[in-house]
Image 1 (cartoon, rainbow over the protein chains, first blue to last red):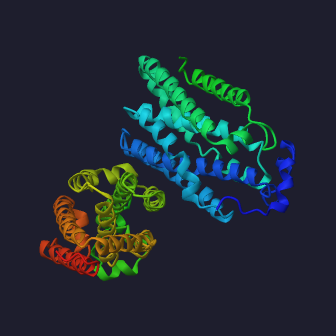
Image 2: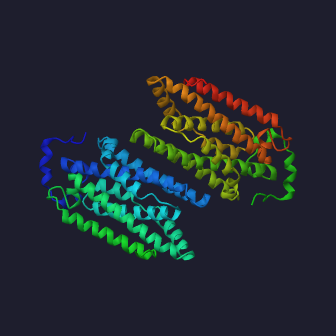
Image 3: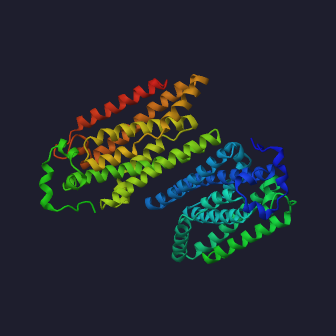
Length: 248
Length: 248
């Protein structure tokens, strides 16, 4: 399903990274490598939303009150609607959503398995950290995308007020018992480590996606540039955690 | 929070059961007993939707494919939006949603604890049975409600195509292996038994609600009439199961 463009358009593959951002999907997708990279990206994003839905719904069980439970259910539902938008887009561009998601199932499942929260606060920190680093990652990537795909990706990253909910609850818990801060700081660090480890595995396995990540399909794959992107995301994470009172 | 009407309007409490259905909320709620019954009803419905969200999200983990997983996540999300509408209505009429839901938490939790599906098909049958009997129950109750509350209750019961999804999957599984039918028939019977047991507990504990169920706040509480309603619901359930190939 992935390569539906005609060979006649393949010469567009030589377009530089900056020009893709100025193109719409119809033009940009004429390059099969770019097309494959976007299908990968949307597949990863879609499964990420579906997995986030499942985990948030699971964490809702840990909620100390009905109001908190409802809030987590709301976050889960919002993730599901993001999933729907991306899945519909995959269908629209002629890609099978399930096929597009499949390559990323293992990475997400491993991540969630390694980072099952043991209580409500760990769940909140995970939701906040996960949302934030995913948002940072996709914003970095968005710069390399055609206008249509960029619009979709930025649209599903729209802040829905979940971060402030998590931040408020975590702050209150640390105020009530400062020792909680130390435990959650270690937890946040572990989350980031596990996220990096899974991301690096994906980067190593998905060539088209990785090439796009570092500045356009025409350029060679540059592991160092991907490393720099991960560094920027880690740095932003560290600053966010410090602001939350979780300096590890 | 429950009794905000003025005593001047209390004489409306003598209005017969048929007249409530002809009234809007503003008029009907002048009767504090009717008001309490509706707050109970909406509280039970709201928590039921939230619990259904949680269970469907949990069952999504058992899905044999990503497409099936997405379908269950969609059902869960739809239940959450129903929850939101009822919760907002409770707030609108001056009732605290959490307080209104609290009395029903134990019954739902016990039901779900006693009926945790052990596989994907059991989860589907449970979603189908649960949706159907809840729908039958609330449609019976709707006849005793003022026009505004009735509109809301019937609105959140709107079929969203979930039943046909479950029916299709269960039918296919029985076609592939007829022994599955026997197992699921017993399962459906157990679900109904457990639902009745929890409902009867709720009826015994919530006077205002129970009185309304049997035909209006002015009438005396009649356990036999509640029993007949449960019989009608059980009968409808048995017919649905037979149609599905699950005659127990």
